Length: 374
Image (tube, rainbow, N blue to C red):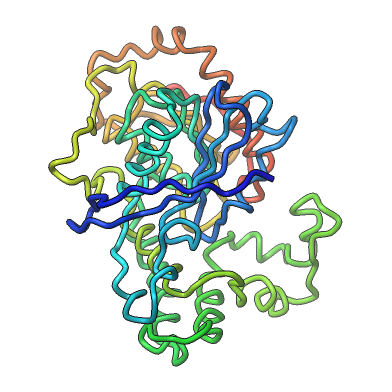
């Protein structure tokens, strides 16, 4: 297993207007001379657990790709509230946005690892929201974006859902207004219970899938539970290895996640948020979700409204109709979809194959990618 490495950026300007000395934790797989693929962590994700697609014969094969797995700020590995001393230190950690994370990750790739072009950026959940931000903020740097169970814009419904587990934790006695000692176990258990119903679909619970997780995950060693309460207690109450304030800060990053806002791009930061060259915005790949958090149609609308790409490959339920461009959404300047699809067909097919493999290995994804012309 590769060792965790650390990239430090001193006096880094943040969305909040503050500056901070930040450290980004990351791991690399494969030789640096190979095509680069970036994979950020998700909510509740650590570097060690963001490897299910990385192995010989897997979608992100280190024999074919230079894979960079990077930890979100506030995940406990990169700079986080839990690294600060005492309750006041934790509470004083600045709010960080996806724009902050993406700019820092881009700096890691370009200035530290010497990458000038990436084949793809791949992400699940909050990792997928970073994918959208990478494509919006640095168009042309990635050939493709692959998102699984994610969204281009955190909906108000999603925002309010997050208020439930956040406030269950904030109101707990052992959280103690952020000045807890050790782990606020009661608060974390309440957080997990409040979160659990939103992570999976009503159909998942109606089918009592907790009794057959071995089939769900394709592993005989996966646990099975006789009743839903045992499942909730074992799978949702613990949050082992997680600090309460880290979870709260990460959920705030999630709530602020909308590519149309691009929160916190400081005025004096010199990079192109929008590229007029349509060749810089060619592909966006997505996977659909069974969760309550992320909806395909909303993400497609947000992507097109902000002119991130004219090409979307998407999983949709079988009964869904073909995606169509919203009437209010113009195409990117100078785009000629039929010509461009021909020009980039090899890149599309390569990324399409990776996306299908990732989706097939993700329990959150119910169907494979299907192509849609917009």
